[in-house]
Length: 191
Image (cartoon, rainbow, N blue to C red; front, side, top):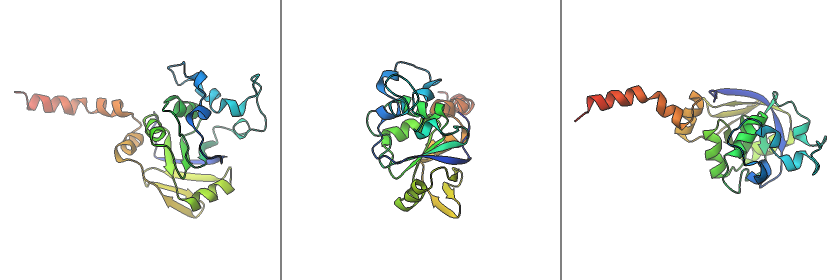
């Protein structure tokens, strides 16, 4: 995972409410234990016809993933079953952040552990983002701010997860980085 400090990117807008994890990554693609290649399966049933042909008019098939790294979604994003493959698919596609007025708790937890920043914003900011697809935004995790032009809104992230994202580590990586301190403590307090 790379450290997440400040991201400036154009947005991709999927305004649908209640986008669940099975829409993000259909269950038939959950057989892999690696993240690599799951971006192709992200929103598969929306992006491809039943015979596997690309739907040229679907937004994710028309954007440059290197320029559009922020997904703006409708209310209640990531609901449904818990599956780590959902943030894996989104990050492999190229997303670094998801913005909505409501993001499911289990999805939020899985996203934060896998380098995808969930950003919850107020209704006014959300409406503004939905009305301006492709708009450039800046998400500053250090300041906990989302900026779009002159509009600035603060957001919150659970402190430990925020620290891990700023450092670019998952929970295990955070712990491993502290092994020397833990070992020194154990030596100092050996019975």
